[in-house]
Image 1 (cartoon, rainbow, N blue to C red):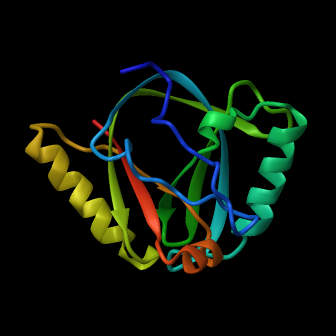
Image 2: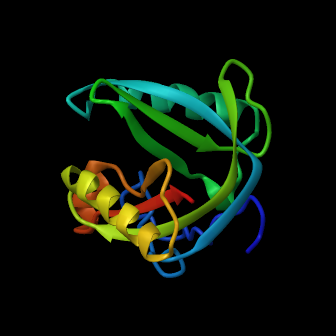
Length: 168
């Protein structure tokens, strides 16, 4: 297990011009170890877990990441979870600090599970992550999701993969 790395993220197939097709091989049941792994932290407003301003926030943050040349092409990954029914938290993996954005780090051990299904099933997938942690004699802390495609691309690809990433 390499420190501060994610499984390989192959972005070579992109027929939509938006999100690349996610290839789940190598992502399921992986163990990750982070030591002060850098992320840009951003929040979005929601109404009963449905995001309102995600496009605006993601566009702003990605612009700042690009301006700072902070993106790592191998790990352009955003970890998301709901803080409440009214607010979501999103952590954008970066290589260095990004001016004009809130920076944070993650440290600890995490494990992954790949799910396929509609976004509305995320609460069930989170429950599955907690059960999987118990099966490892661990307790899941925060559970994040890497939503691999936007809704339009998920429809175009006819698959909607999400990667659960849980702190152990």
